[in-house]
Amino acid sequence: MGEGGREREQLRQERAAAEEDAGRSDRNRLLIGYAVVSTVVLAIAALVFVLASGGDAEEGGPARDAGGAHINFNAEIGSTNGVKPDERAGTLPPAAKAANLEAAAKRAGCELQLRLEDEGHTHIPPGSPEPGYRTNPPTSGNHVEAPFQQADGAYLEAPEPINFVHSLEHGRMAIQYAPELPEEDQLALKGLYDTMYGATLLFPNGEMPYEVAATTWTNLLGCPTYEGAATLDAIRAFGKATWGKFGGEEVFAFTFTGPTPAEPAPPQAAG
Image 1 (cartoon, rainbow, N blue to C red):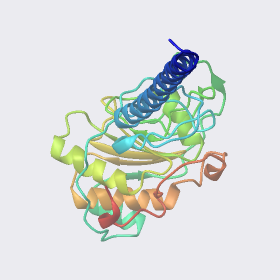
Image 2: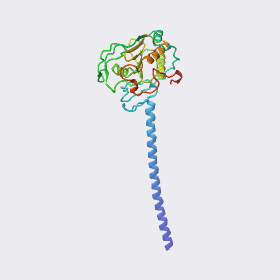
Image 3: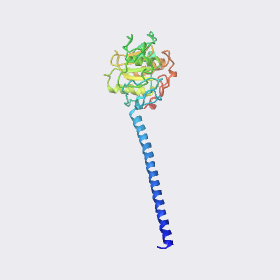
Image 4: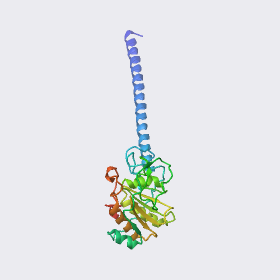
């Protein structure tokens, strides 16, 4: 092989080596790209799963709305305390027909007790025995220490009374129903709740002497029977008259989302 041939062969080998190095670099960059894309996809999938399932993020994080249950919690607002959320789709309520609380309660056959005795504000540890509340459901009294007050939301199970009584102290309203109430009626209450879920709780209560009740701090609306739209009107009026006005701790000091019992969303906006 002549001198020129040796030079061409050397150049060929150098080009081959350079192309091989370039190929390795391209493959490495491609693998890194795949890894980055996979990481992003997995992160998005995890986020979608958390949002779709209502989330199991650590309590104490940012307040959030967990789907149809409207769970809203953080270190200030309260805790879910492991109570199962109610994600059922409610039935849209009819438009209100009665705005006056006394008239609405009478029309629905409900007992109305306003400005009851304040039974105390002492904080007690989680799991403590009930302090012997003098109303059923309770409307005030000693209750669990922060941050274990029951978070705003709809639940399929009854929270501990010492937990939701602390919520009432924060200006919240609790709508409660007998567990044996027909599901159609439960979904009607859920639909009403969907229009007024800000700073509000909804849950079954098998210990009270009513089919439906609503409570705020030192106030009670007790309905022996569920009377459809009349009962929904009474709850609306009760919320407007008492929500956020009792308990000694301004409701607006605690972040919440959505419409309020004082200013519920119109039925067509529910959902």
